[in-house]
Length: 517
Image 1 (cartoon, rainbow, N blue to C red):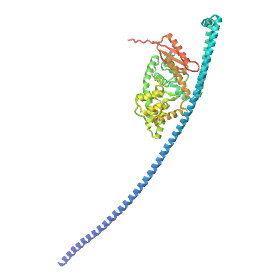
Image 2: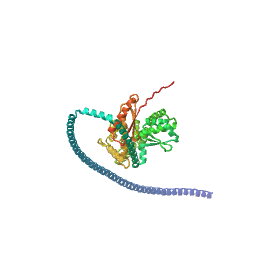
Image 3: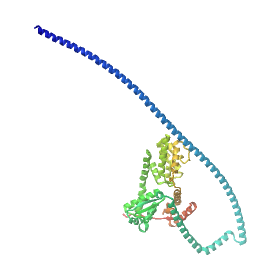
C-alpha cells in the first residue's frame, strides 16, 4: 500500500517537474525568439536605411543625367536657331544687294528712256520738216501737171487697175503658193528642232494623250463617212485627232490639258459604247463635261490627303482639282502647289511655326490660277478673293497676296511660302519657258477669236497653225462669215507675233430638229 502511494507520488512529482521544465523551456525559447525578432527588426531597419540611401543616390544621379541631357538639347536648339538666324540674315543681305542692283538697273533704264524720248522728239521734228518739204514739192508738181494730188491719184489708179489686174492676181497667187511652201518648211523645221531640244516624256505629258483602240478597224469608225465623225469630235472638243500608222492607237493633241482630258474620256466612252455618230458624240461630250466635276474633286481630295489637310469647302477643293489641268512654264500647277506646301511645312517645322497653316498656305498660294482665264486680274488678286470668300485665315490670305512680293509679308508663314515657291520653281527641270510662251500664244489666239461678236467658241488647232472659229448661226449669216474670217485675220496680224502663217476657218452650222410622234 505504501509502495503504491509512493509510486503515485513519484508520478505526480514527475508530472509536476515535467510541467515546470516545459514552462521553463517555453520561457527560454520565447526569450530566444524575441531576441531573434528584435535582431530581425534591427537588420530590416538597417537594410531599409541602406536601400533609402541607395535610392536617393540613384535619384540624384538620374536627375543630374536628365539635367545634362536637357542642357545639351537646349544648347543644340539654341545653335539651330542661331544657324537659322544666320541663314536668314545672309538671305536678307543677298536680297538687299539684289535690290540695290535693281535700283541701279532702274536708274540706267530711266536714263535710256530719257535719251530715247529726246531722240524721238528729234525724229518727230525732222518728220515735220520732211512733211513740210513734201507738201511744197506736191504743190509744185500740181502746178506743173495741172492735176491736183487726188485727181492724179485717181487717174493713175484707174490705169493701173486696167493694165495690171491680171498681172497682180497672178503675182499674188504665186506669192501665196511660195508663202505656203515656205511656211510648211519652217513649221517642219521648228517641229524637228523642238523634238530635239525637249525630252519626249515632258512633251507627251504637256501636249499629247494616247488613246488605245481595241483594233485598227475602230480608226475607220472614228473617222466616219467622209470624215464627219472626226470633224465633229474636233469641233466639239477643240482637240486635234492624229490618226497615223501606229497600230491600235490614236493621239490627241492640244495645249490645254483639261480640254485634252475631256476629249480622252469622251473618245474612250464612244469606243466602249460602239455607237459613233455626230449626235452620239455631242451627247457623250456633254455628259463627260458634267462628270469632270467629280474628277476635279478627286484630284483636290488626293492633294489634301497627301498633305494631311482637313476641313476645306468642296468648291475650294474643286478649284484645287482644276490646278491639275493648269501649267505654269510647263510645270503642273497642282504638283507645284503640293511641292510648295511640303517645303513650307518642313521650313515651318524647323522654325517652330504652325506646320498645318504653312502647308495650307503653300497649297493655296496659286489657287487663283484655276480661274485666271475666266476672271479679270492677276492670279494673286484672284487668289486673295477666293481665299477671302471661303473664310481662310489671315495668314493664308497674306501668304497668297505676298508670295510674289506684290504685298508686304506680315507673318513668318508668308515668308516661308514665298521661299518654298522660289525653291520649287527654280529647281533644275521644274519649268520650261519655251512651252509657256507657246501655250500663252495659243491662248491669246483663241482669245482673239472669242472677242468677235457672234462667235460661240474658238479653238487653236494644229499647234497654232490653224484657228477654228465656230459662229452662232442665228447671229451670223453666210456672207458675214467671210467678214468674221477677215476681221480675225486682221486682229491676228496686228496683235500677235508668230512663225509662218495661221489659217482661219470659220464654221457656221444650222440644225433644225423635229420629233415625229
